[in-house]
Length: 116
Length: 110
Image 1 (cartoon, helix red, strand yellow):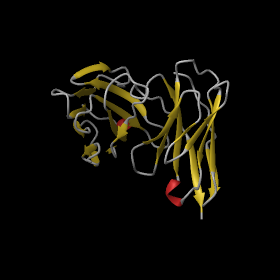
Image 2 (tube, rainbow over the protein chains, first blue to last red):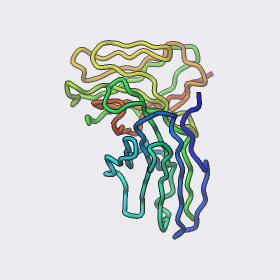
Image 3 (spheres, rainbow over the protein chains, first blue to last red):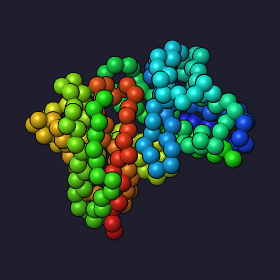
């Protein structure tokens, strides 16, 4: 079946530009996560949705970062006034139902953002 | 979540068993051990998880010590496609936010 998809796969932005990154989770998955992965580092948590509710946004690095999932399926991560330090791979993951140890997260291929 | 410690890199000959260690000495009683791997330019991929018993699936085996302070991921017959960064993570539930470290970069040598 279809996995998690993300678009675009690559994005080059000029400093100060706004960008929007899209995530299509596996159909029917309740939970959706965004992670940021800097070069040579492991992914770091940004934010978490259960259906359309954003339950945890503790990892968002600044108020320039905003995520939404209005209908409980597709999610968009928006970065306003991009800075060079925002350059990273942005990963989206989904899981079926919240709160069970047997749950696994299924990751998309990521969007590689380069801010010049 | 408990912190984990993994060696930064390891090599393994193709066809041999790859044994990847992980220390998690501060793990609490309700935390599971999860392993994910990340092949170059791809998103992380779930491998296996366990609480206190050893586990095996089609990809790997997970051996957890009796005191649960460490574990070993075993890839029984490593292939070149197993070259990846392997992350050991402890968490209460697999679907909550995952705290990745820097993992172990495993290189399979032909």
